[in-house]
Image (cartoon, helix red, strand yellow):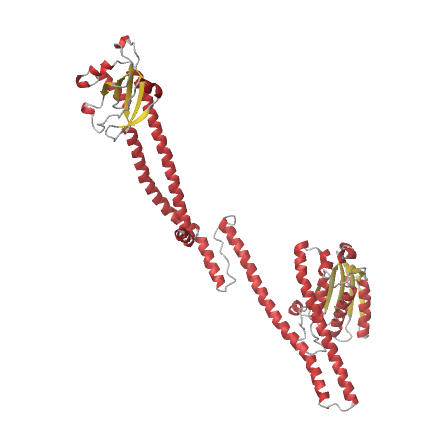
Length: 536
């Protein structure tokens, strides 16, 4: 039994959407047409039966006035011609039966006898109707079978009216007027036959029309299926064609799918780029770590093999080992710092979702920062001294943003030690990558609702392609791996991460041959809550 119940469900589930829609439409049409036929057929039958009942009541009132002897006045038991015409026109060949008070048949007028007796040869199969039974029916019509069982009859029984002198008088009893229902049943049967033939034809026509309509309506789904198959084969650039208006179901589905496909393509491209960057990062990191380690290992091998006999050689070798060790320690520290900020950037993405991108959440997502109110002019003044300490021959100036005016107050809520690291990296980068004696400008102040600190040089500048990648890890505009000019390529990546952790941005504006300007933009302190609120 379970298998039998599941089999139709399995067949239905395996059927195509076109087949299911068409079958459902045909079933609904069939059910609707059948219900309509039942309602109209029953209404027609009820209407015609009511007409027969009304005619029976009128005829019964007439025959109740006539005495039973009227049935004997005709020749051969036939009623008088006037009565025959009346009964035929009113009821269509009725049968009038007179019964006594105790229910015995006294006489009967069969208008179906003689030449008119054709298909309805049988009469009504009446029950015994005595005076009490007639009174119980209260003049309401009732249905009886025919004597031969092939025709239904509608009958009404009423008491005869006695003392009617004008009509020859009468005896107590009842009169029963019966009319065949063959005309009613024949009309309804013909209607059902018409409904059957026209209904089947209509279902066939509508089924064919529905098949073409469903096929045409579902054609966009076929196109979507083909597009999805092409995308699954690897063509992520494919899009669902606009097959319908933007406000239709198919139009909205196509728009939604195209939006989803664009996001999928972007995600795959981002993943591919991330994988490429990760591969490049691992290769560069391995190279940067391997270089000092190789130097340290080579120097220690020389010492172990006794190649360093003099004290001066030993001291020089140990100094080189110390320098390489310091460089290796700084590299590892920088990489760990970037790793921590990568972790915090993930938390920041979650915090942006929870807080709606509120900048005031920076203290909660970057717990490594010791935030406090400060003025960026302090860092600008220190940067001025750093430049002079690194290269006293360089002209250095302190201005407002974009070199306009004098230095202005730039209040911010920041970790001073981390921002000093930012400024130190920017100043060191400007000194290392510009010719000796070229000027450097340090600007500080506010622009709109931001506190700004910028370091500008007059060096060779950057190409647009270099400017786009300058903040990538291990990227060096100087493609040679000379440590004196190229460095490890992590300084500006650390600058970008530290500024981003403060809720700010760092940008570069450069023109080849005309220098570069690195600008640090932080939210003004007036736009941020107090440090207690952030760190609590």
